Length: 156
Length: 154
Image 1 (cartoon, chains in turn blue, orange):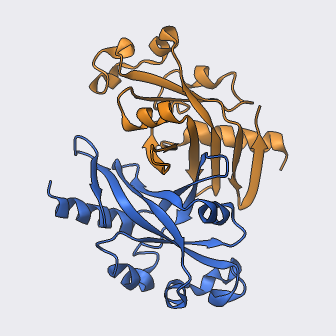
Image 2: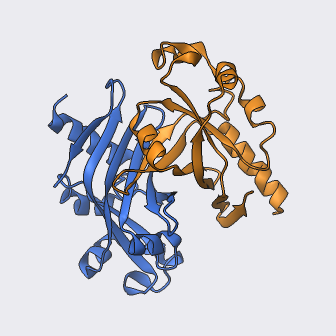
């Protein structure tokens, strides 16, 4: 399978997966995992698909979290992380590895903001609780059965 | 909810999920996640009940992998892992954290072995590639019906 075709499969999986799993490293060096809302899911977040249309080549993943969360503290102390998209029924998995950045760009934070997030972030998109994390993947590992083995490639 | 009831709900989640998510740490310090089979689920492992029978309190988790797999290489260099189970319809998730170890017990490996795994390990339970891992977690944290919880495990 050509790299272009594999990348298309990766994008398709990111656009349809229900959840994305984020692993960070805690202060004792253990990985910690949790499920996150998948903002790349086109059915759930139609209005922000245009944000991700700008990231079809770099596979950037945006996630939202609260300033008080343990993952927020963990990525500030150690930005090394990975996210995993998968479809357990079809045995498809996509691992993106890279560093997480806390997004300070107000424009991006506003473009991603959803009004029903007010229950989590009462002071809105400019408030202190609302954070957007961006994972910039450098390394990709994916497996789409019936491919015989996982495929790895690097991103810029 | 009492801790006893919550733990029972967690054991049920672990016995019914199809997939489990294992995170390890790579040589360059990045966490890597992948989906794994669930040996606490009877649909996948015939001896699931027997394996977990005495582990309602310590939440011990067994997993299978290949000896030359990238995750095994990472585990040999750094045994720190987390294992995650989640059911989003039930709003129930749990993450276990601790150090994982290889179990060098040929009898136990024979007991766990199932013939349909021959596609992965042609040599059966004695195949040198057939590795049994065990995690005795230090702690667990998760959400049950939107309420966070945490267990310290001994």
